[in-house]
Length: 187
Image 1 (tube, helix red, strand yellow):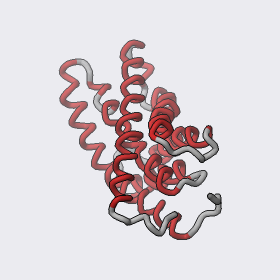
Image 2 (cartoon, rainbow, N blue to C red):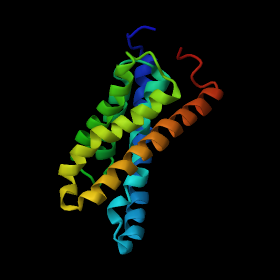
Image 3 (cartoon, rainbow, N blue to C red):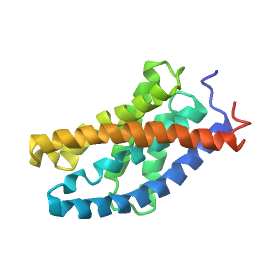
């Protein structure tokens, strides 16, 4: 496997970034609904955490399909930028969040020198995206105002969400797409 990028990989990476930007924007509405549902029970801050892994999924899918250094990071950065351009209520700070999440996912692949794309590494990429992103959100979103126990639960839920919604679901989606033959020309 070469680290040289081909035009078809760049195009696929861009398409994935745009498609998932739209999905991410839709997920924002779902998160708002969860926050609204959980708030009367004093658990509103957990609302987004249950689905936070969805915001890491493009990095896992892109890396798993393209298998090149930078695919995870770049796909998240594209998705975050497009989200802002199409009107995300999170605003331009979202691009920083996307970059941090992409770095977290990329870290898991870097540890294996971009040679291992088994399920455990994809799950680790989802978990690392959660681990890398949490300190940013801790300060940027004011999590420090919450009780330490609530913050710990938020962190644990985010890691589980990253493992399941990004790692496990990302692999499943990629495998389903591969079965259609859409990636035959990729490798």
